[in-house]
Image (tube, rainbow, N blue to C red; front, side):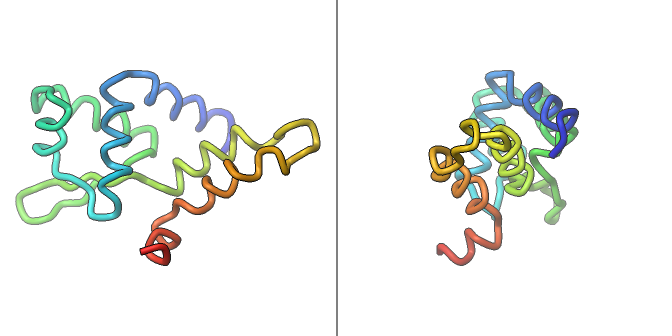
Amino acid sequence: MDQRQALIAFGALSQETRLHIIRMLVVAGPDGMAAGAIAERAEVSPSNVSFHLKELERSGLIAQQRESRSIIYTANYEALGGLVRFLMEDCCSGHPEICAPAAELATCCTPKTQEKLQ
């Protein structure tokens, strides 16, 4: 992830509802959630959640896919891990062992790794 991508992602996450949505989608896992369920759990109107989902998708932090008449949103674990790795890139002035636990988490949370953990 480069600095420009990180700025876009952090911009998307800097809003309370969007941060809440991304955390819900991370918990939901690879099955994701329908837009209506997200709106209900976030306690916002469907038009409001649509705006926030569009911003998160534009940032690359979530993806969508159509299933029948619903649109299912999922967290983009690779992008989220990339964001954490971006923060940890120059970790601790040459002492990466200090940041190792966080760096490991950033790489462990990809869909493939999650499947292995289940």
